[in-house]
Image 1 (cartoon, rainbow, N blue to C red):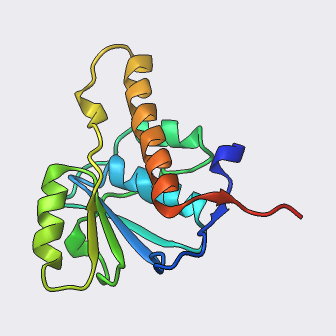
Image 2 (image 1 turned 30 degrees about the horizontal axis):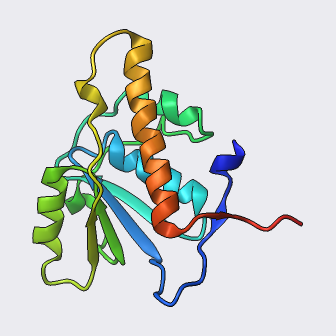
Length: 159
């Protein structure tokens, strides 16, 4: 695990940081499982989950690029929002336009914050295997940076 991916701490703030975060994308095959895995790696005390608007198929490039960050997503099976056991989240982060619209519909009567983090769809990239993997790496790295910034990532104190 790279130092940049090492577990961090949620800094104390005046506003209470979320204790449970749901990441949602279109099919829970690429962006939302990546985000949930990264958030769980960076903030081990944060409860994270992921779901999609509709169920997709596992994406073969996701485990490859996530393994580079020390995360095993080879067993990830996409699920929908309706498949979740409960919706007790403090924050729902949506990663695609359709996920954002669905989350707003679903949470309109709930006390939950919904944030939209537009992320590119790496499946739209064509070219060599390496060019495609680079598109997935770019999404992974954008998600990592956004998660760190949003939750105020700081490395754990050594010693």
